[in-house]
Every structure is written in structure tokens, then in C-alpha cells.
Length: 258
Image 1 (cartoon, rainbow, N blue to C red):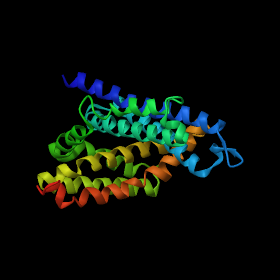
Image 2: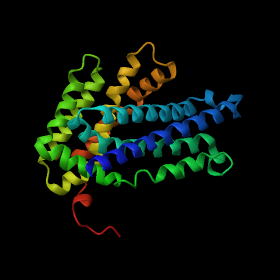
Image 3: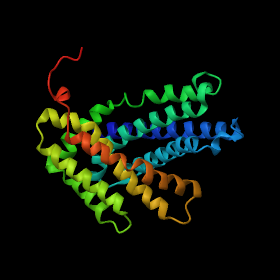
């Protein structure tokens, strides 16, 4: 039963990667052809930011999914819910950026950019919503066995000679957040489960991306995307660490929403 579910979740994770990659490919082609301000818009720094973010998300998701699929059993069990949720959220973010790169043309059917966004939207929902994946990580990955597999992964990232100071610091923040969640009241821990999953996915993908950045024979575009991941996406861990440890009273209480 769990083998079937895990295989399905890995498949959905790769669907999120595919959505990010396809949205990127369509957007980069459009940006090369669309002339604005004296040249193709791919020359504009903000457009480059969006395109490179899309490619970095696709790369990080691909690395995370493959690593989760091939890792030893305990680490694979830890990372499969992370891959399913992180990659499908990344697919949504990339597809949304793809619409933005197209501008107004992205909102109509002619370009196909909006279709990528609609197609990507189902992936965070099925095979267990991403909120369920976060609770699975919390209960099975952190509460059971005191989070041994998670601690081992973060320790390996921290002790890897190839890890940069920024990557080591991100691993430390994630470890501290894991410890906070294990001791938090149940509702506070549940409120922090989704941002913690995003933390663990980001730091793990960042660790894997750092290996790509070091490979001199890797495709130049992949090395560029890996660098962007480390410089632009990995810092999200700092914000997420704050969110995990400071759940709003409205999240854990029962105050009226309307």
C-alpha cells in the first residue's frame, strides 16, 4: 500500500517538475522573440530574474525527486512527501511566473502559458494534498524516532566539505526548526508543518544544486540555474524559520475567521 502511494507521490512530484520546465521553455522562447524597449525582453534584468527562477525551481525539483527516489529507505521515506509537496508548489510558482513573462498575452489562450498554470494547479491537490504531506513529515518524519532520518540528513549537509557557509547556516536553521516543532504544542506544530516542509525541501534541493554548481562539465545553463537557486531561493529558509517558530494566535486558536 505505502509502496504504491510513494510511487504515485514521486510521479506527481515529477509532474510538478515537468510543469516548471515546460513553462520555462515556453516563456524563454517568448522572451527571446518579444521586443520591447529597444531589444528582446530577455535582456531585461527582471525578466531574467523570472526566467532563471523558473529554471532554478525546475532544477531543484528534479534533483530533489531523483534523490528521494534513489535514497536509502529511511531517507526516501522522509523525503517523498517533501518532494511531492515542494515540487508541485514549485511547478505552480514557475507556471505563474511564465504567465507573467508573457504579460497580457500570457492570460489568453493564444500562447499556452495559462494552460500550464491550470495544468499545474491540480498537482498540489491529488495523491494527498500538500498540507497532508506536511503533516506526514511532521508526524512520521519528526515525531516518530525523534526525527532521526531528518537529523541525519541535515547533519550530512552541514558536514559536507562542499557546503557553503550559507548552506550550512540554512541546515542549522532547519535543524533548529525541527527541534522547535518536536517540543511545540500539537496545534502550533501543525501550523508550522507546511513552512517546515518548504524549509527542508529548499535546503535539500540547495545542497544538491551546490553539487551541480561544482561540476565543471555540467551544462552551463544548469550551473547558472544552480547558482541562482543558491543565491535567490535558498535564502527563503530564513523567512520560513521565522514563520515556523512564531505561529499566529489566529492559526492555533479558534477565533472567528469571518
